[in-house]
Image (cartoon, rainbow, N blue to C red; front, side, top):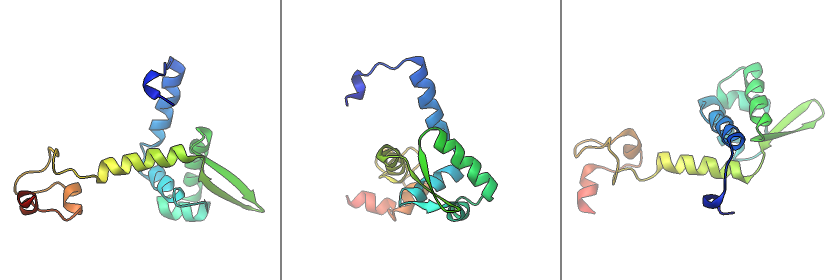
Length: 131
């Protein structure tokens, strides 16, 4: 699908805004990253998100409402998974943006110090000079 040629109306923008808002919370992002590895239950998601079961269930309800996650019931247990591959692509793009190679264009880096993201990949200012 060619997104450059799509015409979005105000309702489309509102729906898109709601989806991106749901990606604006650390606990929800932790839940989504965990679910990108496969289905799991609420108890594990509580641990991952650092939330109570009630708070985690509320987050999952919001994510489910926007079709970001889906659930299935097995007896008394409910298991959650990402709704589709689009969600994985959104997560991967965001993670790649955050963890990617910042040093070339990173405005936070100086000749003596790297920002926290660039430093995580182990690069030093001397490495840059050698390249």
